Length: 482
Ligand SMILES: Cc1cc2nc3c(=O)[nH]c(=O)nc-3n(C[C@H](O)[C@H](O)[C@H](O)COP(=O)(O)OP(=O)(O)OC[C@H]3O[C@@H](n4cnc5c(N)ncnc54)[C@H](O)[C@@H]3O)c2cc1C
Image (cartoon, rainbow, N blue to C red; front, side, top):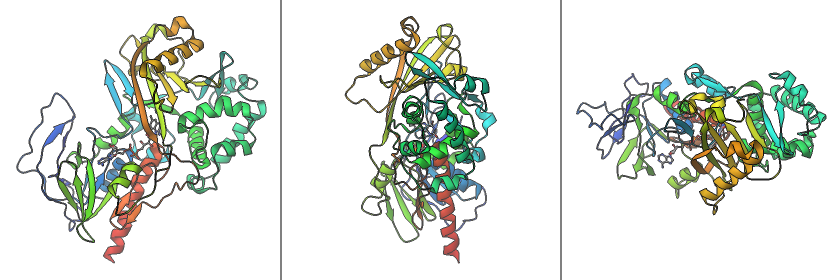
């Protein structure tokens, strides 16, 4: 249980700072603390509340903002992390309801993400692994696609299935070698085309493109057309080759929560929406909150918010770029069922390779992470791509139940009880070519941006972008001192 202040007159950074001369000055602040534990009442701060020191204001406590704060803390630089929502995590959030663990949208954590490996304690996350492959629904039945290095006999057994030709399956092996021999940096700055173009150039048949790549990578990018940059495809393909697909035992939000727990608790300010930034002087930026309060930073501001939010806040001053459209959207629908009525027991992802219907992918979450449901119950997670605006929740549920009855049988699916639906309008930025996955985080000295739109639209990209924003800030400070 931690208490986080929700207003602007705290800036605690207790360790000795390299930047003692850069004081954080609240302008018109009143203070209040909240607890993330609902059983703990809200407290008023003690009069001796923290020393009046911080340097950098980080706006947004998604993975990018948390990574920036982590790096600032490691450098002994005082900071304040200001978040509009009532909790950290941004797009990586989980709800716990009636014993079920409901991630806000289907999200998978790939253990090979390089930046995540540096920042996270995997053991503490108690990562639960998926089967390395998938079951593809095509022609009225399921067909296995397996990683030959991890499930050799399954892969051999599936060589002649209708999900692709034998040549396609050999090309997957060659694609693996092609990405593994290149560094992440080389991949992220390589010449780019749309993913679909890359796959065609490699020689994949339309059969495997439609039956495997569109539902699988389309599900990762929320883009069944596979127009997303080949740079992102290669990066994710490499991570998939090197790591496992997992879920943290306590839900996907355990990832940002672990990062937040390592930060000075008094340096995170929740329920505080930033509306604008003003320049008091060359050195000093004023961050204005929706509640009328203002924060002053002499050391710099890092905007770790979505691109369209950053554009609004910097409007009329500096425009960090235009958000590409359409942004990527998804719907996640949860059902519960008695644990002994689950039609399959494997921790495997099911893909729609049929070319029809609205379901893109689904899985029995409790087959991967039993902790996602209360004892005796199972959790079913179904994902659609797009928002289906104009289609009611009831109609979507009805269509999904009907479609999946064709997969698992009416008798089995008829037992599922609808739990909840998440319609996620902004899941990921659109990263179709042309992209720059190594964007300069510097808007101007003292003002920086980070977030998945600055690098790759993944957990890892967001984490990298936070670190890089701080590195740019440090470089500018060092230059200013010379
Ligand atoms: C359903 C879904 C599935 C996904 N699946 C995967 C996956 O399987 N693997 C993967 O690698 N990635 C996945 N992603 C992408 C990944 O979650 C994102 O790339 C990453 O979390 C982005 O982090 P961020 O910090 O850049 O942005 P965000 O998480 O959006 O954080 C921005 C934060 O800024 C706050 N904020 C915004 N405006 C203001 C303001 N004015 N004042 C104060 N605070 C503000 C927001 O509340 C938010 O907390 C998925 C995303 C979604 C939604």
